[in-house]
Image (cartoon, rainbow, N blue to C red; front, side, top):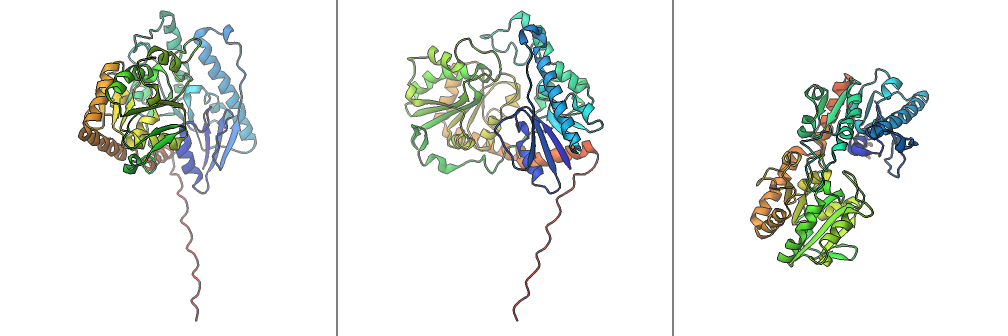
Length: 424
């Protein structure tokens, strides 16, 4: 089988399925993306670059679409290069959000496309308007509606779609949902798993040490920003730290902006650090930025309470990983989180935008260790039942088989080794 993957940030959502495919004899995997330092042995990388036109001359509602069409054009060129070199894929798999797949139906006519539909934008009911502290100006409504242009162009290809949660699929119009398969994502349960020994030895990150006697509160986001409730977490810190001298807090995330508006002349982290300056012990709070994966997982295994906050938006992988690690989780009271966290069973639910309620819930779990242990076990049980990576890969392959209309060939069984004759 020949697979062509496309995502501007290699390998995107496709790390695990690609590793599985290239381990199977007879498979060829090519990947079109923008250049980066990531590398998977056995994958044929094809890089593209784009030169943006002057954004100031493009109507504001069309800037995202303009960028998407530039990507589509560049990816189309790279696809033709691959075709000229003799690579004709059996299936094309990629993320529709960037527009990269739009021209490949012309390059490889008749080749099925399985596109990732991540989010359908709306002016109400999801992320926009959720947080009154950061209102959306009325003149932004046309731009938000226009952000679905790529969604609509992708759906008009009349190909195949996938999305990882019931909530994400429900955001699309009813007529579009018929084209989008639900494909729940998994995590490596053998890597992300509880480790009772993690609390028995000190954990050090740089010069910051979490001793066995310390209670550790963890928070993870790609970037520290309001969309992931960073401001709420920061405002909860003073009460938590004042009430529990044995608490230390580690908050992972960069200083860029992944989602939502930027703040002028500073970062969201610096802004909220200034807001609560003088009200908390900064020596007990670590914000090391983005860390290697093993450090991230090690913190989850050591965590006493893990906080996951988000607007009604695409769920972070870190919540799945936290559940697999058996974290005691406090999750935001929004639909995408409730698809994973059942209050009192796999975690506790708290209002996303209420720092006082968040602090009270954290303190409750630090006191009630019986409840914390029960929630930890419930989270791991949910992960084992719903987030197993092998089952995810199996569902993925069955979906691919359905789309291409034939079974994916199994790897041939290894030939038995010839036995050496016994000595006379």
